[in-house]
Length: 156
Length: 95
Image 1 (cartoon, rainbow over the protein chains, first blue to last red):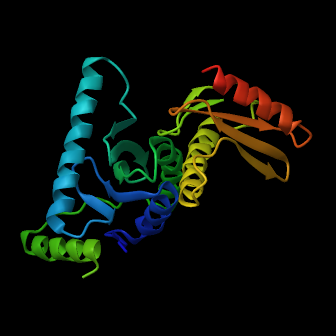
Image 2: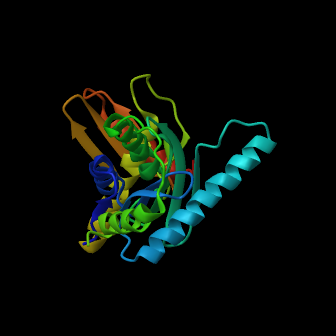
């Protein structure tokens, strides 16, 4: 069975609960830049990176369309296929805006995912600590931090 | 309320203020789907009527057609037989 992994430990339990309740197959919690905070169900780093990049790009595009229409930001997007559906939504947290990408199968539904997404947002906002002060990114730390993040996301 | 069977989303409703329509729709459609799987696995076909007896009320559901589920939330004192007849009549009439 797939497991839930998180770079930031506070994100793990809320994501796990969301997956269980909404009966989703895959999920990613990330920043609008596509930086992954937690994931469930992905086995390969390349899949996580592709899903995060594509999800963040979709949110970025719909945000741009919303601006053109002088609308506030779109809150959620749902695409339903024959066997799978995707749910993509953004919310504000103490650490800034976050994006959730969920993939669900025929055992779930857009209604269930939407319903438990609202609980998930409440859980994440409650669990999320305040933003850390920005620090200088050093080239010598970059590879180490990247490797640590990948290890946290895949439990290696 | 009328609920999209596959999506679990509300199509139309007339509910009391304290009933969370979107939650009832999502969970009732999921329940109907699972009960449907169970009854088909048991070889008794698709369910025609679901009756959930809870401590403070009842929830009944019946498929109006292949895409729409009718859901009623009522007090425990409700005449479920009458509700059932009305729901099946609406389903037969094709909404």
